[in-house]
Image (tube, rainbow, N blue to C red):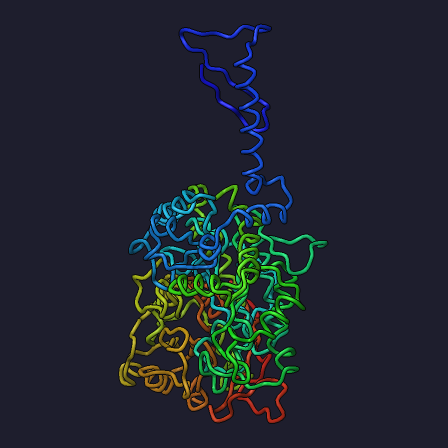
Length: 615
């Protein structure tokens, strides 16, 4: 006779063999003993699995699991490894707690959502096969949509979103991003970047919403979009993720990374403590109140001390004063042996390891990873959905800033008429999806061309917007003779920076690369033109300003170039106001609103308006 025991002794299933049976009321002593044994096993098993019981209080689950973990299992939870080395065998052997996809780290070229899910679940199964079955958490740099993934909606970079000053829209972007990330089986995003960029020479300035901490604070509304709305009575510093359609967020990079000397990436921010709190800390207050799951510490320094080594700001201020009860991720897979040695030799106390592991487990429990560790295919159609592309298109419209409109206020050039004889579209960025998306798109540094993902270039958008009778001629870099001899009604010139990310974007001159300036000169010296700038920050434009009739800062608008044409041709009006100061020359930098010697080309908050045109 065989017995199957179920938890808490609520059921005993008896499977009768061909030569034995059990009759009601005639239970024998051996059967009683077996029943008692089954109940004892069930009780022990239930206690052993207490940390897996979602009905248990959060702290009980954390404590119950932590006490079962060996030092090796604890250290494994603190380690984050790159996808390329995260085999199921590695996950099981080293008890790895987290995996990430770095820039351009993908399961296959142009991988589908299904392919991503298959990869993530394969890695997860390695984690679930360990003794305690602690699920791993998978992270990705979804800084303007799920930007590593082919066909995902690519939203404008933060430099443009800050212009919108629209927290409701930002929350929608967070919600859409969460769905598109979950569509690929991933549960964790290294976003938002809430740095306050004080110097556009910094190569990460396009990841910052504004030079003004108040705008950066308002834009933290992306966090409840990504994670869900935390309850009003929740304790400060407690992470919150509201289910399988949401992701854990990461506020970065703590703290002061946007204030380094000359904008040099990962360099030194020289500033008083009071100014650090006034300028760079406010977005972190809001992020913590909104339940952000993680905070990433910056590689930069504050007054000569590396942030990773700053006990006062990381431990005393972030963890103790702000009551931040969540994990601070570090990537140090190569240090497993070193860390183990230091703990076993009393160099690092076990209490510090336990503190870090508790924070990691807290996030995993809160977001329901123990109950739902594996992804399914239910959200794959969310990737690049039309609804999300319309949100991105709205974001593009609200992020554009009209800096000049006509040689005089009495004769504005914009909006352009949809019905014209012939329009010239020129410039290196007019028909280049990669350029208009910028860095952190499919690859770390970004790409040029139109084959990287799916979207609408500005040239395509113009063609889709104008009257069918209007002829559009595209010439990337025409000479002045071509322009003068073709009797164009007007021209749209789209030029700007080439894609970059992080240190590779640091620039001391902030000039538009050739042939951009030549294109502006050749075209705008001959006919009426509007210049559309595709850049991650303000750039040197004063030398060309008198030549152009209209000037638009479009920043890095992403895949939905139709949003640019919506404004150029008057389907919607310009509303955007600069969220950062536009300098005259780089010699003025750093220069921010409120500075004593403030003499910008276009001040913070500047932006001309237009009214929609009725057709």
